[in-house]
Amino acid sequence: MKPDMFERPVSILVGLGFPGEIRSVMDAYRLLVEWPAPSGDAAHSVALKACLAALRGEVEAETVRGLFVAFAERHHLLAPAIDARLPIAPAFEIGTVPGTAAGESSYGTNAKGDHHA
Image (cartoon, rainbow, N blue to C red; front, side, top):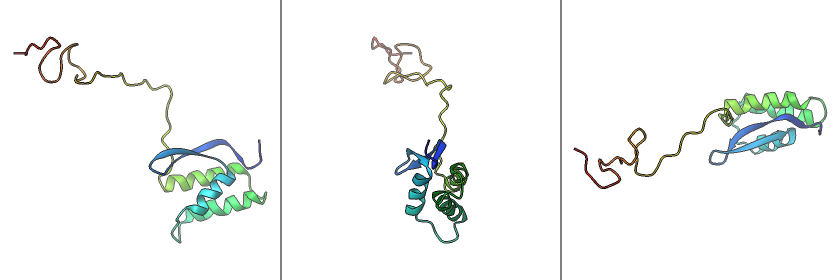
């Protein structure tokens, strides 16, 4: 593994909420350089300085990862973790309401076309 690679990537939301992964110090550095940070944004400044120090070999990649995660949390960039253990919601047929009897639509007509009383 390269010395600037993170042990685990940092999943962030980019663009219109699409997930992306920051896998290395260089990935983090590129994002931070392009980030429109206002002056006084301490999380941005610290993370950027850590990236530069790591690129010079003065700081370990995992230190940068921790500071980058703090920056991403501060700016609500972290992608929500997806738990593979969660069950997937069942698919529903179009025109039916969950919890209604089979063949019964949400419009009060059953599959045969008979109206309910």
